[in-house]
Image (cartoon, rainbow, N blue to C red; front, top):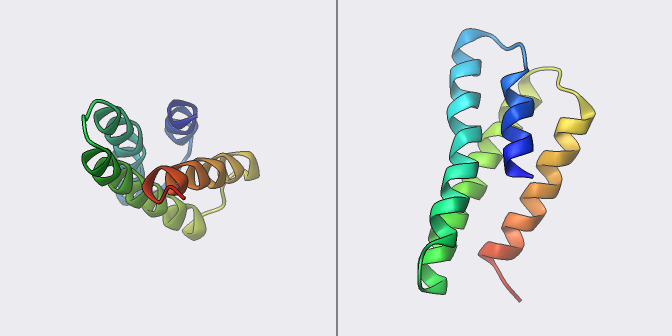
Length: 90
């Protein structure tokens, strides 16, 4: 899902400063998820998942500033819910 989100972000037409920020934040979602999954302890994993969630929230803030396809917004919301559960397991 995170990779699909990244690919969707790559297709967006954004002003230069937002495009750069969005590209970095969306790649951070994927990369921190991957790094977190390779950590040994749940505490270390949650740290990276939390960073990934923060990057996703940054992407969602950019999407609030510009008109973005509702499918991409829904995907971001779903990823956010999954990341939240990884960061704060019940």
